Each structure stands twice: as structure tokens, then as C-alpha cells.
Image (tube, rainbow, N blue to C red; front, side):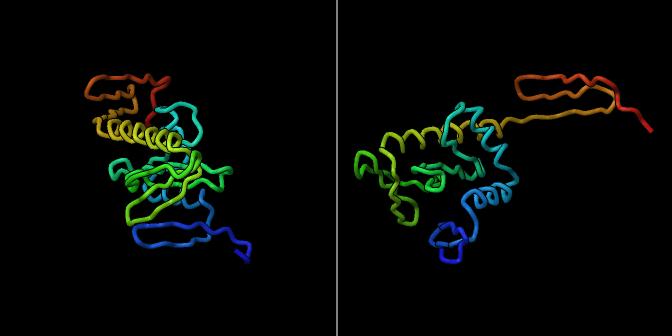
Length: 168
């Protein structure tokens, strides 16, 4: 805008907000709200899909809140859409796709239908893995003078401590 502030448009439900933050700041604030951070979310997604660009970000797997990046020519032009709000998509031109979202929004994405479907598929894989990982029951047993034992439904791991913790 004219006052040299970067504004980001955020659509939440039927409401549209302009916030005086960068897209990255909005994403980081959203991750913090859900007790996460960008390095953890990005590294977790990369562990599933590899070293790709345009990595989806898991805000909250149980609520199916996965931010899917639909990149433009620059990072600033990237449009982030929560995957469970995507209702349908259709080809406009060879390099442009319309995405229809919850609440009736239609968003022009500067990508081909194949690229949009690829991003949506990657987000679905990340979501599935996040759900299955979080649903596993895991216990950590710790005694300051012994090893740490991690148990899940299918395996047990023992982490050896080099030196026992000294009692005061």
C-alpha cells in the first residue's frame, strides 16, 4: 500500500482480512498458534516427500489443516490454501487453473492443472503420514541413572546414556 507496509490478504471462512504482516509472518504465527514452528513443519514434510520445492506445511493434521503452496513467479506471489478448503479445480489455460474453495471463493492459480494436482497430491501424502505418525502410541521411560527407553506398539528403542546423572 502507499504507506510502505506489506499487507497480506487472509481469508478465514467468509471473512477477508488485510494484515500488516508478510505471508511468512502469517504462516509463522499460525504455526505458533498450533504449537509448532516452520523448521519443524518443513523438515517433517521433507522427510516424507524429499527435497522438493513448494513443500506443504502441516498446521494441524487432526483438523486437516495443511497449507498447500501454489507458487507464482516469485515467492511473494505464492498463494497458500488450506487443503481441506479446496473443493474443485479446473483448467483455464495451459498455465492457469481456477481453484474453487469453501465459501465460494474462486482463485486463479498461475500453474497448470497437472502442477496443481501434483501439489495437492503431495499435501495429501504429508497429511496421511502426519495422521498415522501422530496416532501411534509412544512412551518414553526415563530414569536419570539409567537409559532412555522408547516404546511403540511395534518396537522398543534404547538410548544409552554416556554418564549417569549425578544426584546432589
